[in-house]
Image (tube, rainbow, N blue to C red; front, side, top):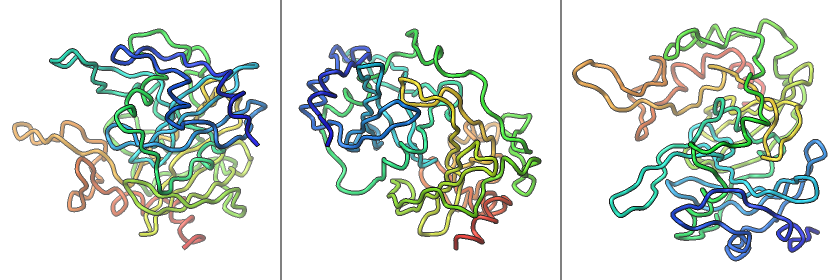
Length: 320
């Protein structure tokens, strides 16, 4: 049984004040964001709160991460398009006319994948109703554990700047050009996911996709852990890749895996069409988006891209 008072009593929050108010451990306790799950990664204990509704239609969670004989509180959020949990560490804001801070951008670290929550955390944070609603204080909780993008932060001191790269054809030389899906191939079988053993499987409810099953597989050399998401409507994608490096006091790994186009999500950004130039100002589809199937700022990537990736075809044949 979790000794809630002991954990909360030894917890520190190192975030900056948000709109003149500093988030406190008492706030977390009062809002019922107390430790309810416990597990250990690389000899570091983590406690997780309930999942709560956050600003901008996101879902969040507070992680209490062991730091020697104390704990530090950090916010994790569920990526809408990718369907995985990531650390919220720094943010940028603008000042509104009434003098309030309005966050307008999440820091993406050395790359979004460098903020990826480890597989055990992903497994623990299954989304199901009801979600905790903490009302107007959600914004304070969400950003109260973070620092501003202008502030010096320990993130860059404890996370490797250089990623682990997959051995294969997954990385385009040009930012807005994607590798053709049929050509996303491994050139070293050790890096491939081993579909013969499902290491973990759970149901979740993703805000952008609905009901989904997540399955975890080690690579054939057991160095990497692949997470595959599969919706009840049949869309499949590699949502993230974990590794075995040490866990930092931020609740994320020291090293991270950059998977390039292999982790393309089913919904991708395509927005702000410029009529003068005839191009989209934000286009992460590489030209593969199905513009006939849109959701707000997103377009579908399943029809023209994900469904043609060899490793996803192999997965779909095994887990129909």
